Image (cartoon, rainbow, N blue to C red):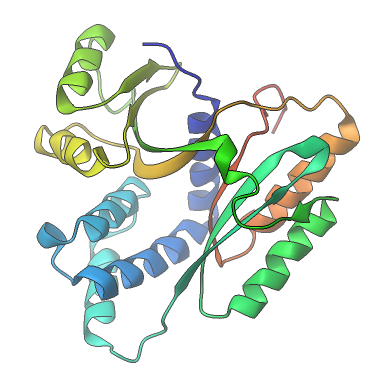
Length: 247
């Protein structure tokens, strides 16, 4: 099946970089705390927590670290309360950027996000200013290295599970679902012991922007680097096509 999947690569690459720095453990720890507070510590009865645990395992987070995080969140009524705040804005040449954060200090986070945009000559806009340019989708990434299979058979299996799109790339298979169907499709993958490198609800751009000017490229990289270094930032979505830019 056809489909544009540059974003899958962008997100997967970012998470690999985060894991190398160790930041991903901090991010996931906060997500575990929020999921437990919202739905309880039982993974079997808390779909959101199950999703976070899957993400933790994909990032090679030790099981005892995951369990400690769940117990801490379940047993500490006075633990820090995190709030989800989403920012939308523009990078150079009208590129669209969405920033999802988990924070215990909205003022600090807002200042840091605005500073990141300013450093790259962009600006934070109003809620909804760019999100209409993205589609919310469930996304499952399966690494070919972890799962050897016939691509055509795997595509039919994924569609039978309820996926709406299947994309084969050089190193990965990308499975796209309706966000409402995502938990059920993800559970099918788990039940059938198909290893997932990533599984989450994400924002996929409807169209991508190519930047040719070196200054514009440097500026959007600056914005993304500042956001990536901020512990409050959980995810960043953008519509810049960076596939031809060297890391």
